[in-house]
Image 1 (cartoon, rainbow over the protein chains, first blue to last red):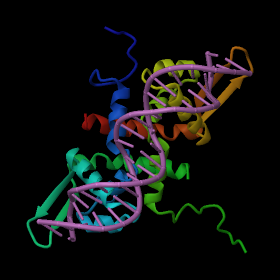
Image 2 (image 1 turned 180 degrees about the horizontal axis):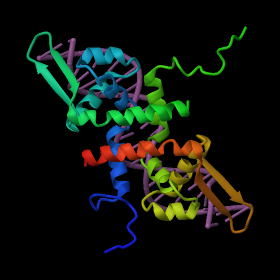
Image 3 (image 1 turned 90 degrees about the vertical axis):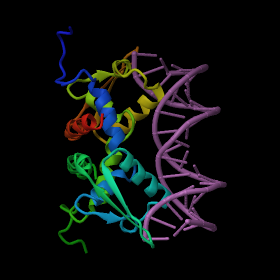
Image 4 (image 1 turned 60 degrees about the horizontal axis):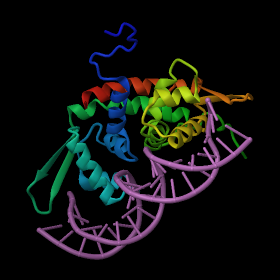
Amino acid sequence: MTPELQETEKENVPIEQIIKKGVDVICGKWRLIIIHLLRDKTLRYGEIKRAIPGISEKVLVHELKQLVELGMVDKQSFGEVPPRVEYRLNEKGHTVLPVIDVLSQVGRVFM
Amino acid sequence: MTPELQETEKENVPIEQIIKKGVDVICGKWRLIIIHLLRDKTLRYGEIKRAIPGISEKVLVHELKQLVELGMVDKQSFGEVPPRVEYRLNEKGHTVLPVIDVLSQVGRVFM
DNA sequence: CAGAATCCGACAAGATACTG
DNA sequence: CAGTATCTTGTCGGATTCTG
């Protein structure tokens, strides 16, 4: 095959494609803020909203939906009135926490 | 007047603001691809362009300019004809490499 | 060769009002 | 309380053409 393979990839997926996927997962103006917020606690929709001043409802709902779809956040609706919905970071979601940690170091450097 | 709080003042910056800055620095469809490409070598404009099929000239130029402005990439123009311009990741730019490494692990998880 | 200058479409994001 | 529904604005990225 290719003898000059320099990347240490376990699969034959090109590294740039993996990076792209990673960017896809973590990018967006608010996504990491939300994830960081859910780092160690389960929160209700309203709590998240209040904790992130500046985000619009539409964007927050949309982001939460995406996070659930990506399988990194679990959503639990209690069939109550008034409604009560809780969000928590699951196991898969926890894999991105190191990114936040490393990234905040970068953030400091470029501050 | 100004007491001795001049130097280490990035302490009480809220974490979300730091994360935002970090996201700012690394986000974009192509940015990390470019940085990864410059990881260990100096490249000319044309080399970068050829190495990243799919990126438009405008976007590439724009990204490179931003990377230079952010102070993570050094640009060196040789006053020659035909033009010759080289880009290389400087010290500050190297601080984002860990992000790429951690992020590609995330990328694999969500692949 | 390295880029600058336009033009354009798609979609991300915001503001506001409304609802079960 | 936890969202929907609309409308508007802003930003990203791409294609093409031109120039020192």
